[in-house]
Amino acid sequence: MASRPDHARAVAALRFRALGDETRLRILEHLAGRERSVSELMALVDVGQSLMSHHLRILREAGLVIDRRDGRWIHYSIADSALGACRLALFEMEPMRAR
Image (cartoon, rainbow, N blue to C red; front, top):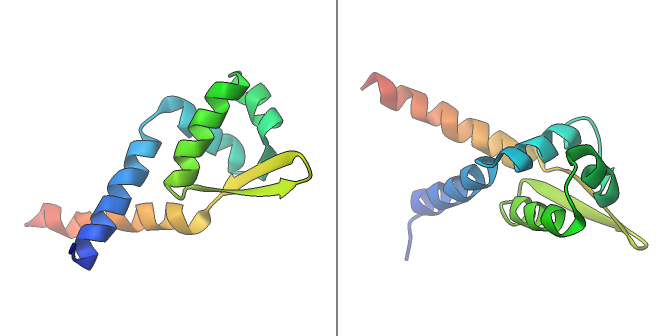
């Protein structure tokens, strides 16, 4: 069974892979200010519904965004705790550089 640090490292790797795509970074930039619907994101990022769904699924599975359903509309927002965990993972690596 994987130890806790191994699990945390695996989650961080999943999140950083999700962040390693320009389109997904653009999506997060548009979500930084407020929650947005899928159709708003499609227009802002200029991608089709299928590709937007693909990118949002990856971000959701990585825990970087959360969704809220309102009738037939789905609204997305940033999962602040996940982004904070990414910042913390980078911050924790800093003392390792000094060694």
